Structures are given as C-alpha cells and as structure tokens.
Image: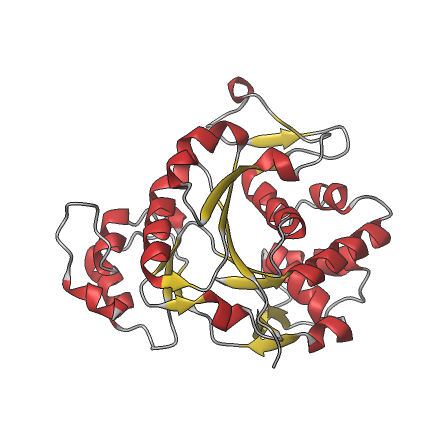
Length: 306
C-alpha cells in the first residue's frame, strides 16, 4: 500500500482581505483536517497585522523569504491608491495579484510538504474536508474545465498563449482547457520541474521570466505544464468537479442570495467562493455558512457541518 503524501494548505493574503481571511481560518479550523500546516504569505510590513493567526498548525510568513533580492517593494508614499508595487531593473513593475502568483510557486518550491492545497482568501469551507484524503494519494488531483477558453477570451486566451511561450510549447489550439479554480492542488516535484523548464526555455531565472510576463495565470501555467508532460500527467488524476461553488460577478450579493448558494450546493461542494471584488458583505457570508462572529448566535445553516 502506497504511503500518503504529506499535504499543506497555502494562502497568500493582504491587509484589505484580512476579514475574509479571518473567515477562511475559522472555517478551516472547524471543517478541515488531514493537513500538516497552513502557510500564510503576506507582505513583510503586514506580518504583525496577521500575527494573531499564528497557531500550532498555521504559520504566517513574510513574502521576502521567497522573493529574489533584486525585487523591491516600492515605498508606500510613492504609490497611488494604496496599491502595492514591486520593482527592479530586471523587469517592469510587478503588482500585488501578479506577486501572489509568483509567491505561490516559490513557496511550494521552498516548503517541505509533498502536496499543497492552494486556497485564496475569498474562500470559506462550509462542509468537512479531509485534505490528505483528497490530495495525498498516489496521483494528485488536477482540476480542469475542458474546452472552456475561447480564442477571443479577453484574459484567459492571452494567459494561455503566455503559458505556451514560457514553457516552450507549440501554440495551444482553441477552445483550450481551463485549470483555474478554487482549492487547487499542486505537487511539489511538479512545481520544481516547472520552474526548471521555464528557466531553461527563457535562459534566465524563472522568477525573472515571470516578472517580465505581464499577463499570467499560475493555475494555467501548472495545468499546461502537466498536460504536456507524460511523466507528470501520469502522476495526476483529472477531476472536472470543483470543490467549491463560486460567484465571480461584480454585483454584490445580499444575504438571501448567499444563503441560497449554500443551501443549493451539491454534496460534492465543500467550499464557497464569493469574489472579493463583488463587495458582498462578509457578515452575510459568515451567517450563511454558520460561522458568525464570536458572541453572535449560530444560525440554522450550521447543520451543513454535520
């Protein structure tokens, strides 16, 4: 019998998402088991703000631990609208979302566990989830939505073509597969081989190559690498059912709409993702998943945890 792979959770976050992140942590502590550690990646100056989340199985780490020394954070007084920007003489400016993608890859390469469930701050678990049972098997789950990306897709098509360039692949035919989702699993060995491939193709360090790629999806990059490697494809199991029910639109949801999403979620769904840019009240999400603030009355949807 094959021994289970060690599994960790990985979440990059920032101060504007701290309330959503707090909800994610509450839901992990209630519903998630089977992982060694929950790693949290934040900007260095935000470590004190996130330090209250440190625990026996959750560790907050500064982003500088995983970044090259030639990449520097622009001082806040030089920025507009409070957006974080990193700069260097080797690339153009790198913004926060782009930086989170780089950090995910670098962190997986650095930490000791064999598999990683990557969970962004705008997710929340509302049903039990065994991370080791899902991600720790002989083959790692690879989420894919077949043929979901059209050639004229404003963002995804560009990201797909940039994956081909970074990996040295022939141009992908459209409609292309989409690997973007929630509670995504990466295999450490695969990520290490991915970074070596990018370095070899670009003839420069992979971090520099990614910093010079203006439109990027880390999940598409991983998925395309696996799909085009027979060795890594055999080490993955294709799954087409996402673990999370998701809302990506910009319009804010009211409490009733969030409750409806949770109540109607199929049994295969263990998490809910309501995009942060929808500005849906976090209190509505908390109530819907039965995790109100301390001191608040638990609502009837807590039975979903049973």
